[in-house]
Length: 548
Image 1: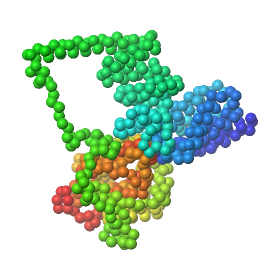
Image 2: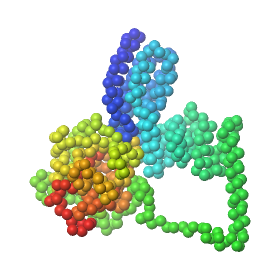
Image 3: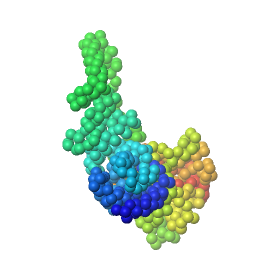
Image 4: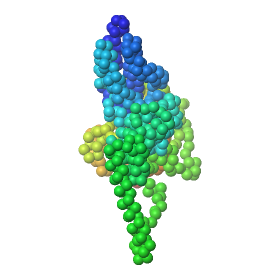
């Protein structure tokens, strides 16, 4: 017993050294790559917890059951950390466990202050994910639900496409998701997830969450969506379980009053419709139904359709003009004997993909260099010009320079050889790793006319072109889409896509507005090179016409 107690400080030191590497990072939910560190942290916590259980097994049987559950989960997760966290439910539950459930465990064992486990756990918790991380992971699940049109039961049971590590959501998980939606005044998702929690309770799942609480949330969220009759039905179900529920009794009277008021208004309208003198007035108030053409579909809808593999399709005639080829960029000496594999992805704007252009060794080296530097990706505020985080860009990024590692310099030269464009004025290689439901909503890479100071500090002109490496395959989701033209380019490890953001005249090509779809399942790593105008004067001469 004594030896076990003396070993605990060693575990504490080991865990603190591991967690110190995490302390520099925040917004865990925005990068799956960095979240894998949390799995190792959680695994070490489980080991520490097991040592404590050996010393206090008779007193802490409930704690032992908890540890066994987490030990099994950790063993599965560590076998393939990125694949495990690629499942958004696993990522959400990791945030929830570390932010909420470990704290509950702390309260459970506080009665025994003689052991070092409590102080160990208390110290470590300062490095854990925050409420912001848990909320961010929860909102990511809601975003995935909307973008890919998934019902709550599909997500709760873990039946997502391409899943390797299936994970089931408990009643508590569903309830937590509903509460987060409720606090965000999102009554639509509140209803969906409270209903899912209630469904699982009705199916016999045991939970600390009771039906009265769920029905209370359900009735109010449904009322807020304007469905008073359904809200009344759920209120009556609540009162069957708890007749003394004060708020429900008040709501019952209010809902009945509102329904009676609505009934009288409908009766008045029916009387007016029977009166011949009012027919002309009623006809004028009826709005004719309009057919919505595809061009009028809001960008958000087109974006989500393309993410699901729907939306505009290229005509067979245009498709027949897309080719694949061996490419040496006008007999570049490096590619004459071993040309690159190039294929057309889209015609207008012209998007090409290069196959097998980045090796697995290069990908791992880039990730190794970037991972310690990953920070929450930012956007430039169009009004102030200040860099800031945004809810529509969920990822972490790092910048790698050619002089830091010969391999980066070699990759930059490869881009120059294949595009024929000068790299000295290009931005450094940006590496990005997407988080839970990671995305970047529709945006332009180039500076528009209403942004005259865009890239002014660089002194290299506008972004003439974009080169994008895909450094991982993605099991589901994660496409790069161009909503204006209906194009979708899917991630393929080791490939790169390239397009011009500006016409040869220097005018911006607005059809290049693009987006990174939310990652449904998997871990998406990309790196990109933004190429600027300066230095391209003789490599890409100006065109005569605006759209040349």
